[in-house]
Image 1: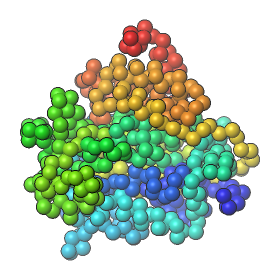
Image 2: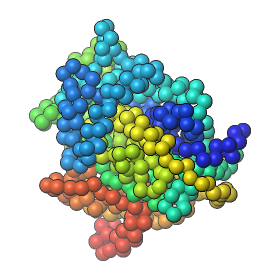
Image 3: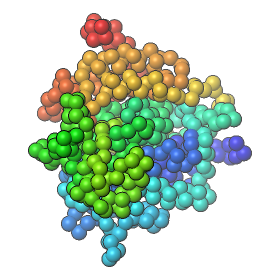
Length: 515
C-alpha cells in the first residue's frame, strides 16, 4: 500500500463500498474521510444488484403519508413509526440528490418520473433506472462521484477484521490487505457492509455479504436488534447459479403471475394474490414446492413481448439459461434477499458504542420492522447516509492513541455456516430446527477459525429466532404460527448470545431435539 497511513490518522473510517458507504462519504465532503472496500468498488455490493428501484412518494397521486402507511403495514407491527415517517418524508429529496449526482432515472416524454408498482405498495412510486438496472446505475454514478472527490481516500482490497475499543468507545480499526495488517487510528467508524445473505446456501446477495459488519459491531460490544427477521424473496431464478439471479417484483407489478407446472395460478385466491407482501408470497411458493410442485413466474402475457425491453438484465440471464420470458415460464424459488435486523442505531445512525455508526442494511433503523416493503432499502441507505454524515462530521475526533498491529483473526469464510443456517433458519422454522442450528454454531462461534465470525452472526440470528415465540413478518415458526397482539424489537449483545447458547446447548430438550 503506497498511501501513508499516518496522514489518515483521525479521519472517519467508513467500512463498506455499497450505496450506503459511498453516499456517506460523499455527504461528508469536503471533510476528509477514509473508505474501506474489501473488493473493488461495487464488486461485492448488493446495491449493484438491486433491480426493483427506489421507493419515493414523487407521483401526483402519492404522498409520504401514504408511503408511510404501506411501510408500516408491511412491517407487521414492529416499525418505529417516527423513524419511518422521517425517512419516507426525506425520500423525494434523495431522488433529486441522486439525479444531481448523475443517476439517469427513467423518465417519461414530458420529463416526469416513470414510476413502477411493486408488492404491498398502494401507489406507483418506484423510481427506476434502465428498467431493472437501478442499483447498477446508482452505483455507477456514486462510484464516479467518489473517485473524483479529493476528500475521500479510497482503500480497495482492505478488509476490516476488528474494531479497537477503549471504555466503550472506538479507538481504531484493525484491517488487512494482501501485504498484511493495516492499522487505522480513528475515533469515528461507520459500518456500511450490507446484509447477511452469504450465510445461506440460496441467496440473491453477493457471496461476500455475510454479516461482516455485524460481527465487527458485536465484538466491539454493540447491541444488535431484530436479527430473526430475514426476508426471502419469492422469485429468485431457480437454477444452478449462486448467488441466485433475482426476478424483480416489478414484473409482477406489470401483471405477471405465479403458476406451477400444471399452469395453475396457485396464489390467485390469496389476499393481494401475487402482489401480497413478500413474506406471504415466499411462504406460499415454499409450501407449494413442498407439495412436490415446480413454481414459475409467468410473464408471457404481461409484459409479454415487451419483456426484453423493460427488463434487459433479467432477459439476458434468462437467455443464457435457454429461456425466453416472452414465450416460456421462468422457474423460480424463494431465496434470502434482505435482512431487516442489524446494528441498533438511533436517528443519526449512532450505535451504543461511542464513535460507531451504521448505515444501510447493516443498521436497524426501525424503518422495516418485521418485513421490508419493496424498494425501501436503497431509499433508506441514501436518506440515512445524510444524517449519519452530519452526525459523524459533528462528532469530536478525540485524542488518538497509538496501536501496533495486532494478531488478526483469519479472513472469514462462511462456507461451513451456510448449510446450518439454511436448514434451521429458512422460510419456515420451528424450535427443533433452530435448536439444532444453535448446537452446531456454538462451538464454531467460540473458536478462532475462519468460520468463527460468520458463526457468531448466525448464532445471534438463531438465538433471536428462538426467543421470538410467534410468527411475524419475515420470521415464521410453524410451531408458533400465531402473531401476538403486541411485540417489541428484540435486542441482543454478543455476550448475551454466547451465554444463552451455553445454557441452551445442554438442556434436555435440545439433546432430545438433536437425537
